[in-house]
Image (cartoon, rainbow, N blue to C red; front, side, top):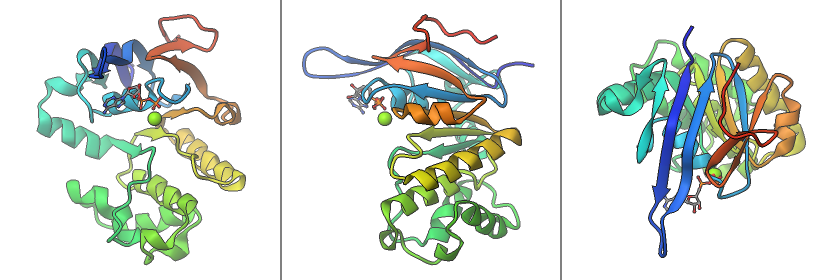
Length: 234
Ligand SMILES: Nc1ncnc2c1ncn2[C@@H]1O[C@H](COP(=O)(O)OP(=O)(O)O)[C@@H](O)[C@H]1O
Ligand SMILES: [Mg+2]
């Protein structure tokens, strides 16, 4: 069976005052279905850029990202959007909830870009309960703590029943107990077939997932934990 995600010679730089910043420098990565991949790296190492390249939110300068063998930027904008909306759940580094929408409306929002399946509200309630915020459906984001907002952003990523979750510092604002609950939730989805790519500077997160495959990112370069460059996957 082919890899669910494949990055080949992926390059992305950003213009800067003196010389361009190389955010992602020739990344090669193969992710198999049902992998739980954790990418560790300090701030500025290119983790967020890599995730947005994988998810088709940012176009690479060169190189390719293939999801199930289809190149993100070769299929046209509309097909790419359909792929994103139907297959990928994004947990962004900053919760990015819409302040004027309730918690329930925020969670249902990704479905307004795709066909809304019947029963989606029931599903939203179920996911809301899974993140421990069943009683907050009618609240506005401003009425929630930072950690609660983050949990809503996590819930939102699961509403389209994605088979890939791209998570950017997902446990950023969470207290220890909530972090444990969320990681347990991730494990459960992973066991049920969802592929995870989690980027974080928190090395404890990697240690907590027994079947995680851990990679390191440094200055745009992805390496195995032992520092060997060029990432293959057996
Ligand atoms: N939109 C952007 N414009 C200019 N530079 C950027 C932009 N996004 C990221 N960078 C730069 O690219 C590098 C990698 O950033 P990022 O992917 O956000 O790393 P991380 O998520 O690991 O903190 C950093 O040097 C950052 O300043
Ligand atoms: Mg980041």
